[in-house]
Amino acid sequence: MRARRSRAVSLLVTSVVLTGFLLPGVAAQGEGGDPATGAEGQPPAVVDLTQIPAEPPVQPAPPATRELFGADCDTEINGSQVVAYCHNSYPQTDLVRLHVECDRWWDVDGDGATWAVHPAGRVELTSRCWKEVRSAWVSHQRQ
Image (tube, rainbow, N blue to C red; front, side, top):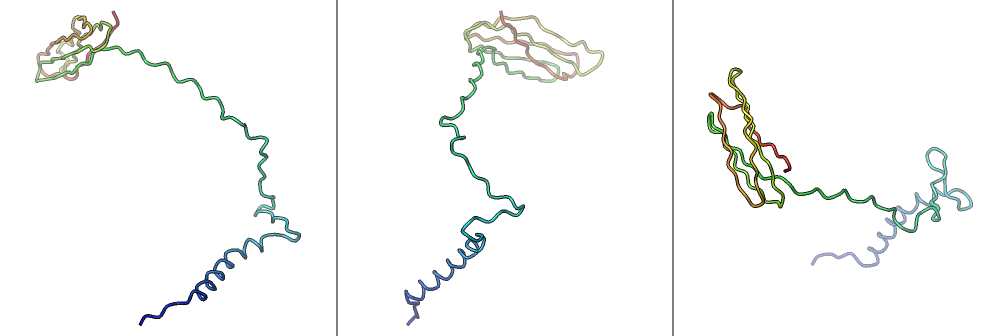
């Protein structure tokens, strides 16, 4: 049979442990029940409840919502060819232009013509370099 601790012994051990936790707090109080000062000799901070505002402070106004504008364009570079597919899902017409920067110093960079992409419209823009393409991007302008 396995030996069990009695309930009285468990309560006694628990009370001794709890007393051990409470003794440092009692010893920290000075004579007369005044709380002891901190490590720097300063009394502990006291919070004045009258200084706490009854309501939370006013939150700043949220920033103005950004107006939705601009066609979504995907640019593909294949060798010296550049193709940009643009789709305008917004209610305003977007003027798009394809810009191509060629890798070779002697190859002329190209800025394509401006094309209007009407609401729910699509457009395909193409351009090329003689050799390699360094970068390509599409610029947007309001009509």
